[in-house]
Length: 252
Length: 282
Image (cartoon, rainbow over all chains, first blue to last red; front, top):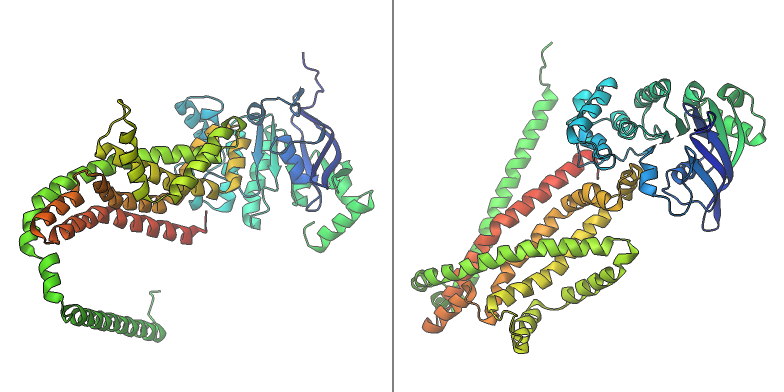
């Protein structure tokens, strides 16, 4: 029997360095099921590295990462199997250009989750219909707008029913109109109960979807709290400086 | 409101028309001039009549055609068989050279030595080593036919080239593609098969076809081992008549054989360039 309050994702004292560059100093955080936590912080604060450590694209130096109670940072864990339970979406979409939208979305269901082609297609079409992308199913990514490409990339991760969805600055490469359609999709995923860890520079969006905001600074969790409290009433001088800089750039 | 072309537009179109007419005139004039001087230089050469008689004699050309065509049929079979194996071996070597798996380390090492060696070794030497050296070993189960050993030499040499082309393609695929595939839970080999290779082969299709064109042409070299291909057949004709026209006949057939593939390569390159211009590189 699994304890009711066991988080889907838990990081304990995670450290990661690239050479002599200590990117994550001592990160601990928990993400309960159906919760959305948003990572904010300046470029280089370790947000992307943190997400890449969670889906095992980077190995950590010290500490532990638990996914649904299983220590996925353990040596010898089946990384492919772990990744199949984690959804990842990147800043640069990374759709496969030689595959149609439908083939992009059904690749993992068919070859990782071993579903048959008909079921995968049916499921993918239903998902595309739900998010207004059904008529793009047979098109190649190059014909889609950036916003459409990123929405397809999110659906490509969502179709596998991941235990947690990691979004790494998914709107940074988009203009404001396209950002809105991607954010609308993410909001809807939140409403349907998706557990998410999001790195973003969109403070308005953080305020809207986050159950908790985590401010990273120099590879450390500097401050956490509800979005309203954190963004309007920072306690640490680091967060205050970060918010001032954002305000100066007109992004808050 | 319907669109009324402005004065400005009429002027622009007139200027463009004039410019294009000028380009055509210049192209035609320069072509005629070059052609004229070529004819003067070649036809005016002191030995022109003798060269024409020994290289461009319609009589000997006509006589040589049947035996050259018979030989050409051998070249065509050698080409297709060699191309088939070259693509398979090239792919296997490229895949093993780009794999990161420690268990494949010896394979990777061998593949590296192989490509270095056979890319550097002249094809003519390979033909001699394989075609004359192997029969010399007198091992009973190894075929000694010049055609088979010649084809093996072509495969050995061209697999090394093709492997390098395919490897370049694999390495040119954006690393983010591999990352995205692995993040979905695809294994290393699934990533290679469904995501990396299809993109890599598309990228290198023009240089790959270029190597195949070169292979087609080089299939004529198996004649040095005594296989009676088109070139050897032309040589036999020449030896009887002391007229070199049969070689030119064989040459014309080789050019004709490679033209479809070269045209296709050009077409493919152009199409890819256009696609790249339209959407930014991928």
